[in-house]
Image (cartoon, rainbow, N blue to C red; front, side, top):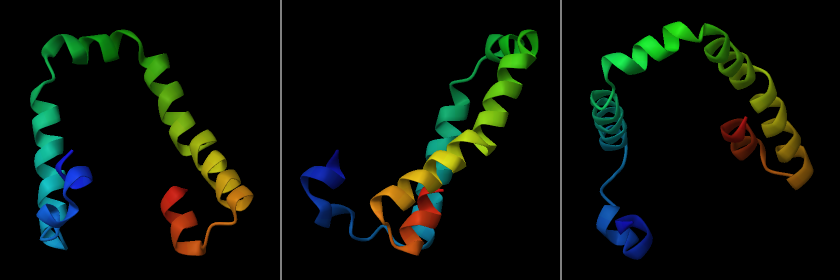
Length: 81
Protein backbone atom coordinates (compact mmCIF):
# COMPACT_ATOMS: atom_id res chain seq x y z
CA UNK A 1 0.00 0.00 0.00
CA UNK A 2 2.85 2.35 0.79
CA UNK A 3 4.35 1.77 -2.64
CA UNK A 4 1.08 2.76 -4.27
CA UNK A 5 0.47 5.84 -2.16
CA UNK A 6 4.04 7.16 -2.02
CA UNK A 7 6.45 5.26 -4.32
CA UNK A 8 9.41 7.41 -3.29
CA UNK A 9 9.20 5.93 0.22
CA UNK A 10 10.32 2.57 -1.18
CA UNK A 11 12.92 3.85 -3.65
CA UNK A 12 15.68 2.23 -1.58
CA UNK A 13 14.30 -1.26 -2.34
CA UNK A 14 16.85 -2.35 -4.94
CA UNK A 15 19.09 -5.35 -5.40
CA UNK A 16 19.62 -7.33 -2.23
CA UNK A 17 16.91 -5.44 -0.34
CA UNK A 18 14.29 -6.92 -2.65
CA UNK A 19 15.69 -10.40 -2.08
CA UNK A 20 15.62 -9.90 1.68
CA UNK A 21 12.08 -8.52 1.65
CA UNK A 22 10.90 -11.48 -0.41
CA UNK A 23 12.66 -13.92 1.90
CA UNK A 24 11.10 -12.33 4.97
CA UNK A 25 7.61 -12.34 3.50
CA UNK A 26 7.98 -16.02 2.55
CA UNK A 27 9.25 -16.83 6.04
CA UNK A 28 6.35 -15.04 7.71
CA UNK A 29 3.83 -16.76 5.43
CA UNK A 30 5.41 -20.12 6.22
CA UNK A 31 5.19 -19.41 9.93
CA UNK A 32 1.40 -19.30 9.63
CA UNK A 33 1.28 -22.97 8.55
CA UNK A 34 0.12 -25.53 11.07
CA UNK A 35 0.47 -29.31 11.28
CA UNK A 36 -3.12 -29.73 10.05
CA UNK A 37 -2.15 -27.94 6.80
CA UNK A 38 0.50 -30.58 6.08
CA UNK A 39 -1.91 -33.39 6.99
CA UNK A 40 -4.44 -32.02 4.53
CA UNK A 41 -1.80 -32.11 1.78
CA UNK A 42 -0.94 -35.71 2.59
CA UNK A 43 -4.61 -36.70 2.61
CA UNK A 44 -5.22 -35.25 -0.88
CA UNK A 45 -2.03 -35.77 -2.91
CA UNK A 46 -3.94 -35.79 -6.20
CA UNK A 47 -4.98 -32.17 -5.71
CA UNK A 48 -1.38 -31.19 -4.98
CA UNK A 49 -0.21 -33.06 -8.08
CA UNK A 50 -2.89 -31.36 -10.20
CA UNK A 51 -1.80 -27.93 -8.97
CA UNK A 52 1.83 -28.79 -9.63
CA UNK A 53 1.07 -29.91 -13.18
CA UNK A 54 -1.03 -26.82 -13.91
CA UNK A 55 1.74 -24.55 -12.65
CA UNK A 56 4.25 -26.01 -15.08
CA UNK A 57 1.99 -26.59 -18.11
CA UNK A 58 -1.16 -24.49 -18.32
CA UNK A 59 0.14 -21.34 -16.64
CA UNK A 60 3.26 -20.95 -18.86
CA UNK A 61 1.13 -21.59 -21.94
CA UNK A 62 -1.35 -18.91 -20.86
CA UNK A 63 1.53 -16.51 -20.13
CA UNK A 64 3.01 -17.13 -23.57
CA UNK A 65 -0.40 -16.67 -25.18
CA UNK A 66 -0.99 -13.38 -23.38
CA UNK A 67 2.51 -12.14 -24.27
CA UNK A 68 1.87 -12.87 -27.95
CA UNK A 69 -1.66 -11.47 -27.84
CA UNK A 70 -0.57 -8.17 -26.29
CA UNK A 71 2.71 -7.95 -28.23
CA UNK A 72 4.87 -7.64 -25.12
CA UNK A 73 8.62 -7.05 -25.49
CA UNK A 74 10.79 -10.09 -24.75
CA UNK A 75 11.85 -9.12 -21.18
CA UNK A 76 8.25 -8.64 -20.10
CA UNK A 77 7.14 -11.80 -21.89
CA UNK A 78 9.82 -13.85 -20.14
CA UNK A 79 8.74 -12.43 -16.78
CA UNK A 80 5.13 -13.26 -17.51
CA UNK A 81 5.86 -16.80 -18.64
